[in-house]
Image (tube, rainbow, N blue to C red; front, top):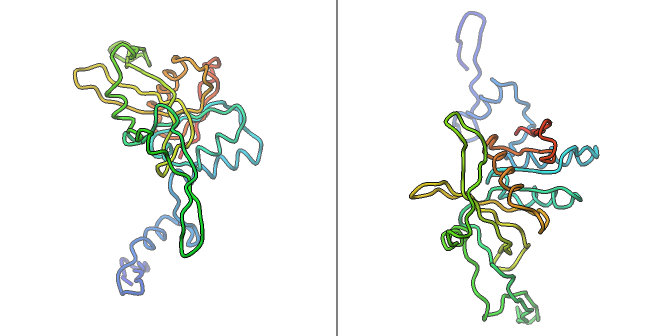
Length: 238
């Protein structure tokens, strides 16, 4: 406890180890309730989506996010369970996938005298590859230059490719989704990767539009249909 001025006292909190509890001090200064627990950005976004779901208030069609949220299976699951809702989320470059869904089978084994079984990928199947490796292997013929937005010095353009892939989870085939890859137009391009549950019939221009929305906000964005450009987006700021 320190006296910092006439009639003013600053409290110094000490934990059980006798060390200054800096987190508790920050909570006190910011008037943060003691019972308020830390939550990650995906957890906060998930809570907000659940709130909207409970209210049956979904005036949007698309959910766009960066890799922080794209790596949250719980968040993606909420969107998938909502009929007609589409996610377009950025993913890390080391995300693994198959170009074709591999064949799997049940393998029986004995554990502590008890027979059990587990799902495995057939040995004859190829191993999953990273989306980064896949992008580097795509022939230039299958990259399409598209304008994402207008900049102060002219149109901002990237090259895009898209294809259906099966994601790998714990070494097993998971879900089949769109993999959309975007790269800058330069000698040593920078790549960005996205997955989407959009219908198989979805055209590239929709993904180009959605990628532009992700660049603008770096958060979880809830978007109306691209036909309603005058009501471009309803943001869920986190």
